[in-house]
Structure formats: C-alpha cells, structure tokens
Image (cartoon, rainbow, N blue to C red):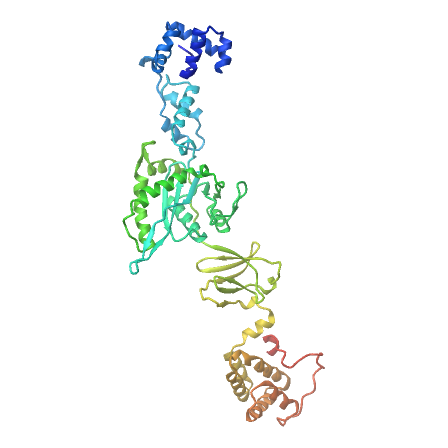
Amino acid sequence: MATERLPMQHLREILRQKLALGRSHREVARSVGVSPSTVASAFADARAHGLDAAAVDALSDAELEERVYPKLPPSCMRPEPDCAALHLELRRPGVTLALLHVEYLTERPDGLRYTAFCDRYRAWQKHQSPVMRQVHVAGDKLFVDYAGMRPRLVDPVTGEITDVELFVAVLGASNYTYAEATRTQQVADFVGSVSRALTFLGGVPRAIVPDQLKSAVITACRYDPGVQRSTAELARHYETTILPARPRSPRDKAKVEVGVQIAERWLLARIRNEKFSSLGALNARLAELVRELNARPMRTYKASRRELFERLDRPALAPMPAEAFEVSAWKKVALNIDYHVAYDGHFYSAPHALRHDDVHLWVRATATAIEILHGRERVAAHARSFVHGGHTTVPEHMPSSHRAHAEWTPSRILGWAEQIGPHVRALCEVILRDRRHPEWGYRSCLGLFRLAKKYGPERLDAASRRALFAGARSYRPVLTILQHNLDGQPLPQPDAPAKPGASHENVRGPDYYH
C-alpha cells in the first residue's frame, strides 16, 4: 500500500506518465510536483495490483482509490479521536494537543500516533465554520457589540414607535450569551450594559473586546486605539483590559458577530409580534429568551451554552469586585471667568486659582455627584443638580473679596445692625427695601458698619436717626453727618491719611468689619 495518499488527479497523472509514456521517476516528480519517492511508491502500488495504462483509464476515481488504497479491515483500524471534544478541551488554559494525545493514548493504547492524531484534528477543523477555527481560552475574552436589528417600544396612548438598541455579549470559550435593550449606544448606556453583563456572568474575563464604536473608543486606530475614559474606568474597576477589535476586521470579533446573528434570530424574531411599552418590560422578556437560548444544546458540542459555561468559563473567571461599579460620564472643560464649569446646563464651582487659559479640567459625573479633577487630583466635589441654569458654589473656591460679599445676607445684615443700634437697623431695612434687589444695598450697609468702627456705635446710631428724618436711603448722608459733626458729637481724631484713590465705599472681607 502507498505510504502517502495522493489526490486522484496526481495519482492518475503519475500512472499515465509511468505506464503510458515510460517516463523516469525524476521526470514525473518534476512534472507533477511531488518527490521521486512518492512516484516510486505510487507506481509500485499500481504494479502490485496489476494495473496498466488501459486499466487506469477504465476505472472511476472511486474504483481507482479502492484498488490503490484499499480500506483496512476493522481489526487493523485505529480508534479515531473525538475532535469536537478535543476542540472544547483546547479552550482550557494550558491545554495543548500534545497533552490531549497523551490522555488519548492512555485510554486507547492502540490509538493514532501524534502526527496522525494532529492531522485528524486539523482536518476536522477545516470543515467547521470560520468562528470555530479560532481557539478561545476559557475565561479569556468577552466579546460585546450592538445588533443591527433594533427592538421597538410602542407608546400605549399615542401609538408612537421608538427604536431602541440591542446590546449583546458573548464569552469566547462557551458561547454563553447576554443580551439587553438600551435607549442608545451612548457612553452611559454602553458602560452600564457591560457592567450588567459582568454581573450576569458573576465573574470577570481577562479582556473585553468591543467594536471600535465611539462609546468605547475615542480614537479609532488599527494599532493604538484611544479607549474612551469611562470605558477605561470600568476596566480599572473590574481589573480587566479593554481590547478593541481592529477597524474593518470582523474576524477579531467573529464570536460576537455570530452571537448577534443568533440574538436576532432567536430573540428579536421571537418577539416580532409582541408589543412593549417600556424598556423594563422588553428586558424582562429578553431575559426569558436568553435563558432559553443558553439552555439549548448546540449540535457541534452536544452540550448547551450554560453547560459549557459551568464547565469551562465560570472556573476561569476572576472574582467580581466587592463594590458595585458606578456608571460615570467624563467631560473635558475649562474654568470660566466666574470660576465655574458647566455640565448638563448647571454650573459648579472650582478653586478660582485654576482660572487660566492653559489649565484644563475634567468633570466626572455620576447620577448623584459631580467631581472636578485637575490631572489626577480631585479639586472639587458637588452633589449633582439638575436645575438648568443654576449655580452650585463652595465659598472656599471664591476669591476673598467675593467670599466676603457672598457671606452677607439681608437677615445677617439686619442682625448686625441691631447690635449697633435701632436706628442703624431701621436705616438698613430702608436701604434693602428700596433696592430692586437686596444685594444692591449690601455695599451701603457694609459702609455703615465701617463707620461704626471709626466713629463708634452711639454716634452712628444718632447719625442714622438724623439721616432717616431727612429721608436718606444710602451710606453717604450718614458719612456727611458724621464728618461735619451734625449729630452734635465732637469729631474723632483723624486716622492716618488714606492712600490715593481710596474710597469709603471700598468694601472689604467680613473680618474687616468685625
């Protein structure tokens, strides 16, 4: 019997040239593209079976193969390996064909030798789908993507139809699948879906493989993609890696491509005639169908996705972190001239010293909090507000002059005035009441308190009484009364000469008035 099984077209050409043309082994070998020893072996087999040129022409391919390569009797056949089982075992970390061959011979001592064993497995691989030709190690990768088909929500009142997204995640080794519907593919929805998928799995793979969609990758690149900051934060929290698929390389994520196709056929097609009015109802129905999908036996492996998950992936997944992941969004901002940054229509303060053209800050926003970071340092933290156009300000972020002004309120001003005298309080009430906005009267009231330090509470109260009688509504008439001794008291000794350009109305911080 021939030592090498040749394709029929090669065998026929060798026998034609040897039997009909009488060419040498070397000439035939160069012509056909095989070794001279192969030619010699095929020629010897043909002669051993009594074949000549006419007999070869008369035989069909099947008959010629049977004559030259007769099947061995059952007693001489070696037991064949279970290639599908080998394929599954190769997904376990550290498992190789050499190890599997040793285990195979342990069970079947008369089995195939290593080379034939590997040949059988590789021949089986070539007849499988492109996805199966990839070897996915257990617990290694979670592939994520969005389906092209989109589920729908129907408003029960208006009948309006809203298309939503279908997120799909598939584990490489077991094909264990997770799917859910979200409003959009935006960052918050994408990161939230990945987090819920990991919770569904109950463990963390070594890498998460998304397509280069904008929610995961801010800079698409074949060799060095820029991962979106929220997605990178998720990877740090779960201690895993984001490994984006290369652009226009579907084989990098063939597992989820097939998973999406299965989700469209076994999830969306099943609910094509059902109507859902809310995302919660839709996801509850999808969860039922996902459980059924994971429980269905797969023909190739003779086992369900759940069975393979429990056998392969679950033991290899890393444990979940103790704390739940909080979905956040990031935004690069600059500090405005009023030392506030804008996020989602609301304004949040940061230290005024960072108000420079070359300083860039990051806002990290969660459902309940706003953090402002300069580099890796958190410089401000606020409770999140959804008041459009509103301001959230921390006094320590303000310049001292602004902080002093902000600390005064009408009630505090009137309380301070009461301590000086009843007429000072009455004058402050009039000043605050006559202004269109109370803050416009703060400066005059603070000027009165400054006069109390210079002339004393008694003189200021007397001067305020006279100013009220005269119909005064500001600081200047009181100052004039005191300067000209119109309150009937002697003038105090003059202070040190004021600096040029100084004004009595130059309002200082609150400590100045205490």
